[in-house]
Amino acid sequence: MRQITFREALREAMQEEMRLDERVFLMGEEVAEYNGAYKVSQGMLDEFGEKRVIDTPIAELGFSAIAVGAAQNGLRPIVEFMTWNFAVLALDQILNTASKMLAMSGGQVGCPIVFRGANGSAGQLGAQHSTAFESMYANIPGIKVISVSNPYDAKGLLKSAIRDEDPVVFMESELMYGDKGEVPEGEYIIPIGKANIARTGSDVTIVSFNKMMKVALGAAEELAKENISAEVIDLRTIRPLDWFTILESVKKTNRLVIVEEQWPFASVSSEITYRIQKEGFDYLDAPIRRITSVDAPMHYAPNLVAAYLPDVSRTVKLVKEVMYMSK
Image (cartoon, rainbow, N blue to C red):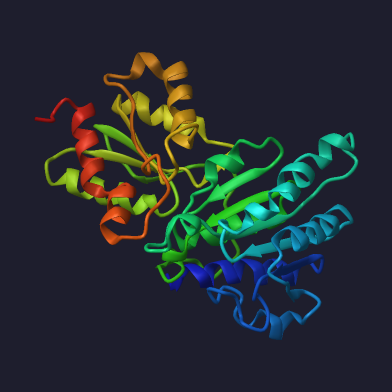
């Protein structure tokens, strides 16, 4: 099977859906003339023209409002944010309009729209450019939240998001746009709300998503050297969350460790922990443990960046703790 980059997978998803449905269009900062801040939309202006690939001012609230209005009137916009750290300016449109319109209109006015872009830390970018937003947006009823970790999932889930009748928040990562992975040539979609078992195992379940999957899988590799078999689950969709896959894994392994880039308070791992202890308490042989970002703003110095984010060694340590193997 061919290997393509993460950015190419996203581009193919948008191109295929725009060829299939003339209502689909892309708008955002630098998506047209510059071919995208991360070159995700490279060549799309040439193929689809300026009415369907639209450069916007650096005014997230304004162009998000235009896109929401277009979605309410029968079009299917894809809104690219240069980073979700800037998209907090568009939260009014996502929270107060896109997510609520179907309910406020009694089911008469929908809002089929995708908001996508880079999320979380990308190294030494400082406090204002390093926040992970999955848990914040997942707290909003009426929207779906997708956070992908590889090119195959990126293409299949973006196509599903574009076709979905609800507003979808789609999280990527600056650090993964150049990652390569196997992606089929033919048409495929991945259903929203279905997690993926990225690695099977029997001793402990590790749950993660987005670029923290690299940490989870790296920890599983290290644990395997010590004959510890870790099952690794990639959530892929944060809302709706695939509780069933997590619970069935915990029934088998009896232990759960969650790795995420969120701050710890009211995070995705908080919700998973509550739900699994509620529905799977009798299957647990140890308390659920998690590793998150530090409960503080990200700093700039390399040593503080390293201390801030989850890593393989700390994940391995937590797994050994839930297996009562720590010294």
